[in-house]
Length: 456
Image (cartoon, one colour):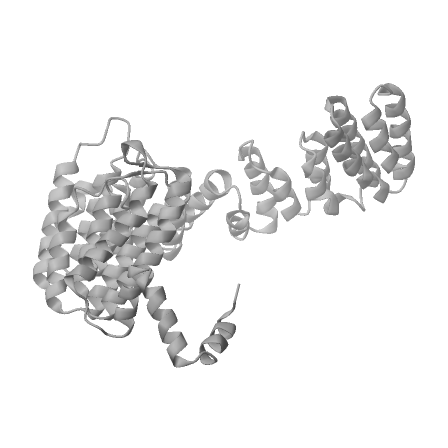
């Protein structure tokens, strides 16, 4: 592909008349290039030009639509590339040349059309296109007069019930939250948010979480917060604490005001809310721990640390070590045994043993493990102190895996695994013994015999 410098050289070395004739002929074949040149040269666009813009977006979208307004994955990717280029170059060009109304009209058409299509969004193309539309809208608001902002507000807010599957409602509400800050617009947004929450109350299907209600309720509180309307915030929160985002908002609000007891109550109640995953329990427990620490309530602080250590944060040793710091050396020896007994089966006890320097227990853990990967995880802890035991563990897994193997790929993996034994004193002899036994026992597996040659 010719690079930019080469193109510049060609242009500079071409006489004016030849270059002019070339450009005229090129433009006569592509109406889109004509419009782009008009924008670049500040020539005024005509009504016919704007119709061409509308036709241009249709030419990008329509060929990709199949029966039932369905856009399959590959065509969706192609449509996304075309629309994003169109929005980035041509529609943005309209904005830069102060054709604000026209740019908004074209993006409205794209917005409406996309929300009527059934698009295979496996590649995230819809989000990318809508993000580009919102970017153009932001550029119009940033550069345009106040009157266009009024027009845009009325239209965008009117779409709240017709977003379809294409528009991300969070993206839509974020745009509304970040823009349209005139007092009457703020009041209107707050009014609509309140109406949406009321309409959505008790509308969630049985057994499901009210996601839509929560989304609009959060939007309502964020608006009220922008407006510094303490009265509306105080009135709204108590009756909507069953929504996690509202509870989180209230918790952070109490903490920021130093109202720790109120925050603690909301956090404790929050752990009993249905439809929440372990991450929220973990978050609430961490917050409770920190609040009790601030309040110097050692008993409650240790209780929350205990919950984190034994239930909510099993992937990290941080709460374990924080808990350890609360005890003397003598006390901790007893406490940690209780923790080891309390930890669930899915906890990696050997990580805790390693933290405490308990090599003998790490060895026992690996000896009893059914996962060969544990050898590599803890080998550095055990290799020098327990070489014979490690060889036994290697051999146990190698024999077990060979019994189950039935193809060359698995034989190759076993050979690679068994090579680890060669790093130990006496490992060569143990490996040779395995080779001898397997060669006899599995003599009818030529692929395995071939792979075993790599161990000799």
